Image 1 (spheres, rainbow over the protein chains, first blue to last red):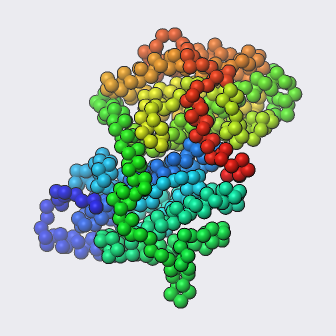
Image 2 (image 1 turned 120 degrees about the vertical axis):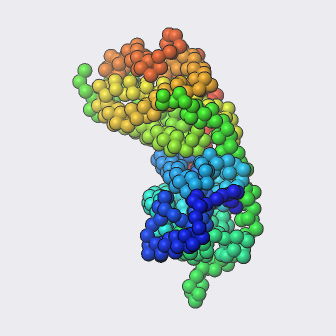
Image 3 (image 1 turned 180 degrees about the vertical axis):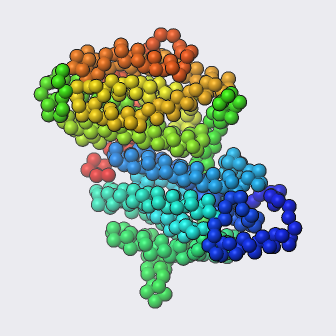
Length: 328
Length: 271
């Protein structure tokens, strides 16, 4: 959990003023207006946004690492160009989002450096899918196709978010994510239509990613894992749908495609219930999910270590850039 | 010399063809290997903005390699993908200095990569590339001259990126300056083969494919001096060997193993 110890309101104000401001704020967002960085906002709104956007931003950056494992290994010149462009976009998204988070954190005196420290200390979490191993080239395709596919579903859900800077960043991010999903799908199609070996690594990859993909959208309710921010997100018009609605939309879009490629999912019970109008599936192990997001996932330590080495190893460069001599 | 407009025309003169192919291999292999080393940095650069910029340069540079390999494909050398992934080290023409590892460790774990090496190497290489491509825009082989024109539309931005890094780091802390100077000293022992044109250098000049080696070196040094006033003495040596003649190091074996790992894992596959 991302908690700001000693966080105080940016401005001292009486309770009555706050109540009035709060009502104006709610009236604005309910009328579909966008809140900007310098506007008054309730503290729990600011904190929910900081938590959401810093986690989103840092996940884009940590998310570059599993795919990046396959960038130097991409099997053709065309794939090399495609995956380089794709992972570069993800870093770009991270940068865009951290800039949005930085503005929100300013009243608390926090900077990007603090976010990096929080990431390395374990206080700032990154998305569960990016704790998973990528064992073959098929995983590079799977990340583009289904992980980014899931991201599109959860992010388009926030395209009308009440916070303007985030909403605008998401517009651009979602446009690029569509290309990423196509890039991933192209890799997957080549494997699905390929040799026996290629089909085998594809199926193994899907088996490997399946529960992480179900976990992607978070638990159905707070009862499952003890905490969930979905209610406050919906109240403040940051997002529209619940975790489960998003997961259903994902299954609805992708399971028919998975089956049409002749692939299976490692859940024999998975099927569409016509009467209820929803997908039935076996719940992933939510205790495992809790462990993963506590940085106890299969590759959590290694990925954080990579960031840590890069961060420490390049400290001299950052020091050089902030020295007085530069630009004088 | 009359311009040679097509691959078919170029194939008519065996000596011309040999020199032409060697020149294009050098361009393609240099870009390919330095782009590979760049791709290992992805996600590990000193800050996020640099990661975005550097990976964009890396991607463009791989694009340039693809254009050069495609010219070779037209000249009957085989598929561009096979040229990039299947050739043995002694068939490769990239300079040895460009294949040097980014530092200790691996991109998959404990990557103690050296930003000073990366800044110095890319600055020196992009300066060379600009000078070389400018000369190639007057090449007698028209398809190659056209590619050079195209690459030069974006390549000067790459050079300018690294030039700013050099200038900023040299003007910053004592630590940064000495790290850069150390890498410059090292480059003066190893950059020599980048500046060479290999065994067909004379033919390249004769057929007006390219300017001569001496002129190339001179132009490069002049251009480098506009950014770094205080350079090591003389011109760079080639103590690691000459990649233009197919000599390569163990660092190159590591690169080839990684970049072709998936490609060679299934001979019948279309990826």
